[in-house]
Length: 68
Image (cartoon, rainbow, N blue to C red; front, side, top):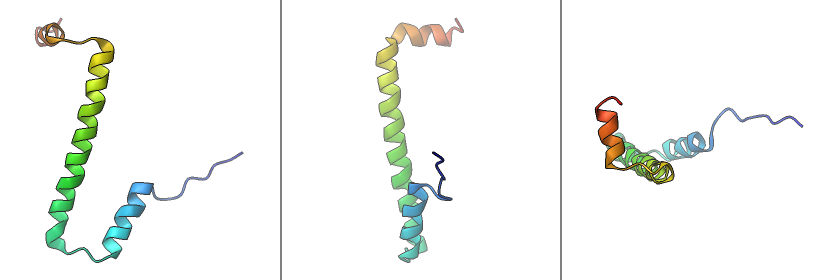
């Protein structure tokens, strides 16, 4: 069975709805910051999981910094 992807992702659709609501330009930087903070939080959570799964510790960082 074939799956046809829509031209927009779910995130793009939600952002288009937001823009259609007439968000003032002066609010856009705040929205961008909220999105950036959200994505940073998710990236930190994921990297923390990987860190624990791989058993990394301060010694790992020291090896990396020495190029080993």
